[in-house]
Image 1 (cartoon, rainbow, N blue to C red):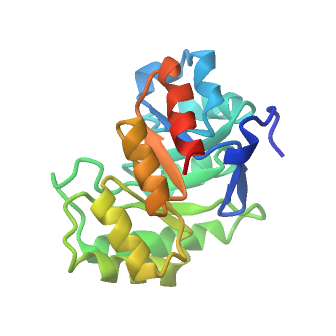
Image 2 (image 1 turned 135 degrees about the horizontal axis):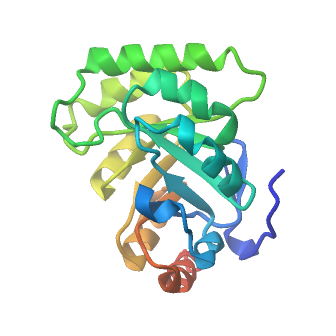
Length: 220
């Protein structure tokens, strides 16, 4: 399916119907995306966020990156339109309606409507692309369950979280039946997240740090 050689066989994992050579994903800012260091392709996937006003211009970049690795595309603004534009050029699409973490945050109703609209758009395509929802860091333990329930009813394939507490609460609420991507700033935190049940890890690290991350993950 993908044009790259698989490595780290003990770490190969299947999530949402996609095979990853390892569960480590690298989050890259837009300014780093146009000249990606080769070492980043040793990770299991790349997580990119096209500028919301330049999604169409980014299509050629996304197409090229996807030839080399699994690609997760984050969408933050004008999400339904952006979703339609990137659908054929992403392996996973992560909806991030609250990417500013509390600044002009969307309401539960807004996110509910967004999930319904996006999943409805997906029905127009023959290809199935998994949709994940990035949960706001500001969600309280009381707010998280109804958000997860709505997401699962809408057809969401997984969620992305920023903290271990949110990871553990999500896994508990879904009885480990929903794939979770968890952020981790260090190799020990990544290993702890995998041990706790995270399906995939996102981290902002340099290529030289990838081997140590993978060694820690192999121990879990």
